[in-house]
Image 1 (cartoon, rainbow, N blue to C red):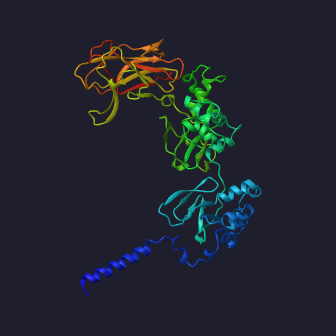
Image 2 (image 1 turned 60 degrees about the vertical axis):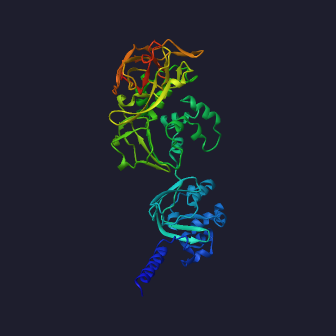
Image 3 (image 1 turned 30 degrees about the vertical axis):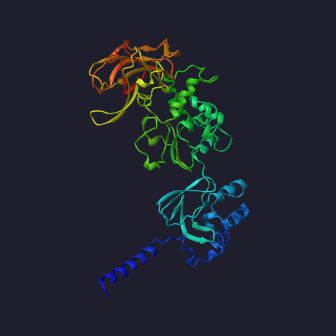
Length: 490
């Protein structure tokens, strides 16, 4: 036998072994000797002595017929012993028992041998169960895996999977017993931001209506979302009230902002509770010493303030807290306004003179900014609108990069005022503060302190960056990387 022929035979043997090793358990079901392959899932589950009680529920709820259809399903079937521990209140309520059965059934086949070591599986109950490894589903252990039937697969588990509330459903369940929960639910009717008004107007009734119309779920995290996982801190009334009261001096707002409502209280509560949700489910032993909210507020996690055990829900964990004490110096975060994100400019017909730039600073850091050059007019103005600012004193900084000319130019900052378009020019009246002109030196990449102003009423304000009062190109340049408004604790 030639060496070449030996190699060919060896290659053929290796390929054959590889093909067998890569076979899929579902594809091999026809050859595994399982007599259940002659039955559909419903018949197989009902006829198996170990799972007969769950089989009876299939008949009771009509799911025996659904699991007799041609679609492919996976069923996680509790043993009779597991079924004996199910709350009778569930089994004696038609709607609850139907949901209970659905929480054990998934559309399509999931073998215990999968590519993903962990994945969330969507159940017919609209909840998700996490399939970990080859032996864990939800909080149950698979004691009998991969029983194939003609239209799917079932796994026998040692614990029934009760339908858990999600975090938002839990908040609803606390209505009337939790001031923080009551406020969160009220945000279905109250709009925190202007964009919320339009969303509420178009949201249709249904089980997802809160997700589409509640200002908290729209602007913070959608705690009604079953697919993602969250951690949520729900403060008891005394601790919640104390945190809200700390915010009230910084959320002084005219009561006309929201008709017939105490706007100061509404916004003080919102700027308290928005920092209580996080996009990961932290078990108690996993809770970090510090957490930072999506709004940049950092606080220490004091586990001694946790009331009772963590409440594990279908999409995360709720911690009942006596209080979550956040220092005001961390709660009152600075507001950074990017130069390239202007809301307008004046005169309005000189767009071609406004440059939106991609730059690299001397440290090699990429940044974006805005520059206006050679516009041929005086007092060219870039206009910005801030997010909600607190009612307090602010220290103001800018970073303005003069890197396209060799001479120093001047610009000034105006805070607040009523804005009006007169022809092609925006005019401002009654500004809160008009800072003096300041030099913009060549190639200075450091933030520069501009000054301070006091905002008596919290809310959105217009800010404008104004060029020099000259038509001379090179002297009427404008540039801005960012503005930084740093609030001062009273």
